[in-house]
Amino acid sequence: MLKFSDFNLNPRRVGLMASLSLRESLRKRLVAVLLILTALFVGFYLYGIYRMYLDFLDRPGGLDPVTGELGSALIPVNFAAMFGMYLVTFLGSLMAVLSTVGSVSADVESGVVQSVISRPVSRAELVAGRWLGFSIVNAAYVLLVSAVMLGGVYLITGFMPPNPLAAIALIVLSILLTTALTVLGSTLFTTLANGIGVFVLYGVGMAGGFLNAIGTLVNSPVMQTLSRAANTLMPTNELWLGASYHLQHPEVNAGLKLSPVPNPLFGSDPVSPAMLLWSICLTVLAVLAAMWHFSRRDL
Image (cartoon, rainbow, N blue to C red; front, side):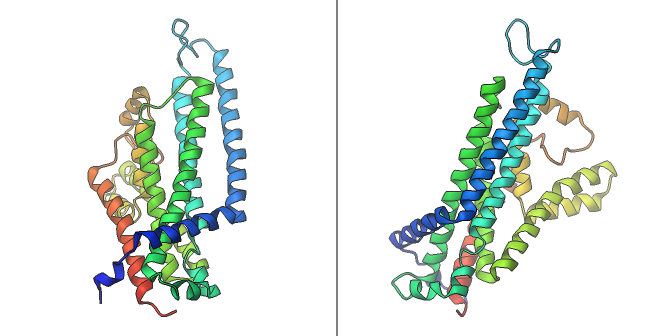
């Protein structure tokens, strides 16, 4: 039975658990390895953009001879920047799952949680602090890598997406949602089962975009309905499609709108207010459900 006492939180104790989670995530070798690999990936990707930019410098019309701005290079550079941010979103989701997958279940399996809740820290405060701490780490990771990726593209080519802050905000929201669902899974399943389950959910969200494209191509209402169901169950892909809209130059957006088939990787329209609101609600509901369930389960 649901009781309000299950959600009675002390901000100081929640902050304490968040700081402990923050320090724990920074001590993990997994996070350090992921940061190193991310740095190598971003450097490798930006070098590829640099080489592509040099190729366009040698082509007629690659740059505007009067203003020096991007000419025919605009569209490939814009797509390269968008795909770079798509990979940043994927890496952020990977970081969210791997850093949070054992946030509660690992403590239960090792018996650490017994010593924590024996102190004046409730189970709900433990879960809320876990989510908050890991959310800070994961959001900081996405903000840092996004800034390096878009800043690198700007320094190399002079191109900056029209509204990068809105795009990054939507990506961060998808990471917070993934973190919340991983914390919820950590209160329900073992660490391994939770990791598999969240990755399957993430795959369902990605499949929604492809199902919509295929359903539109073959005019299949059933596939389009399945696409909407997948995006509602796991709206991370819809958030990314909305983020990619804010990364598009008007010429690129016009080209995507003219396509008879929706692009499964890049959206031509902003995310709908209803989907945005649902994503926020789902994040909050996942955290509340994790708090409630962990407060009720036997250890």
